[in-house]
Image (tube, rainbow, N blue to C red):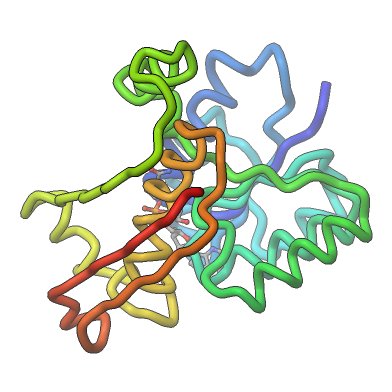
Length: 222
Ligand SMILES: NC(=O)c1ccc[n+]([C@@H]2O[C@H](COP(=O)([O-])OP(=O)(O)OC[C@H]3O[C@@H](n4cnc5c(N)ncnc54)[C@H](O)[C@@H]3O)[C@@H](O)[C@H]2O)c1
């Protein structure tokens, strides 16, 4: 069985990965370690997940466990560091969305993926929500014929939406902004539904991220 380790011990890491890996998936993989800059968080996750070993340093975890797969679920601006280090160590990587926060880091990751021959997978869990999967099924079956034009507006309510302005998510340097941090889901779902890629993308926002009041994105699929 393959050895998995986890970077980041926040809510996402716990519910999406750590609990299933130490529970329903435990016959299919070895969950061998967790690392988070915040040791208390890592300790709490470990306590809920069969006391999986907690490491104080990422490098130490990699040297000790020699994992096959590294799951990256830390804050967005840290993803590229762990993805690249894991590829260099010969591991496959599963990373939470977004893969990273800007084009430069994205190119570095792609380059290292190519060089290492290992794989980086980004988890777009929205694809598995029944509503989204049903739309995909209908479109693929030709229920509405060929799609020539898509207008997508995504509204966040004051509970879910407000959450993006409370912590590191609200800082451009840490999340890449809502267009990256949140809309990466929407870009992915559109590409997936249409089984296509946009020929042209343009966007505009108003002011600094903390004061963002307008978001307007146009995709053109031809
Ligand atoms: N797929 C989805 O729908 C979805 C939903 C929520 C979050 N996410 C993604 O999951 C990831 C985690 O989000 P979250 O809501 O759990 O955030 P969070 O802030 O609760 O957890 C992030 C964790 O990363 C740790 N961390 C920060 N800097 C670090 C570093 N340099 N090295 C190691 N650990 C570090 C923090 O201590 C924290 O425990 C993010 O990438 C986020 O975009 C995805």
